[in-house]
Image (cartoon, one colour):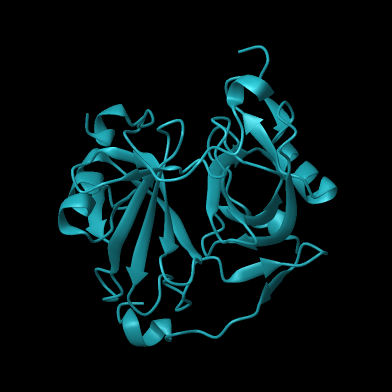
Length: 128
Length: 128
């Protein structure tokens, strides 16, 4: 049986996925896929996500060129989520940081940014 | 401002969180927290989750003793999810594996288990 057939998509037809950089082990982002995005991701070996705001699937990095190439795929024990280990082109975050989790929370609940931007979003997202 | 005040909980009052082992970098699980579980996690430095099937918050590892001690906290760029780096006691998965993502998917879409169980669930969850 293909693992896809057992997956539990939620009431909106989506399943949460975790994206991890295969080399560094950093968690890059978490997002959602519908069945179409998941199948296309597996077929093309590039991450496709269901963008809820646009109600359609999109190649992750479609605008910025920072695509994610799939290296390994894992499924969780309850068939409720999928983990992709990827090779990240430049940076995962639309803010220009390598990981979307670039803000660390200190003991007071305040955000601290400990890393440098990989790119300036103004140079990449011209329409902004 | 405390980062909690900006977080986007979904219509059910939940936010997805990713749990990563601080030492090995392995992604252990993803789960959901409500505001109460999140606050208790930050206060006690142990992961508490909102267990949807039981409709209450629970200490992760409450039954098995395999608790997760919080080392670092990160928030994603959209305030839509939280990443916890933890110290894992024994194993994260109720199936007895270190990570809930113990099933790797091969090129044919089939599951392959490449690692050993840390414990036998029968020894840990007596009521099963």
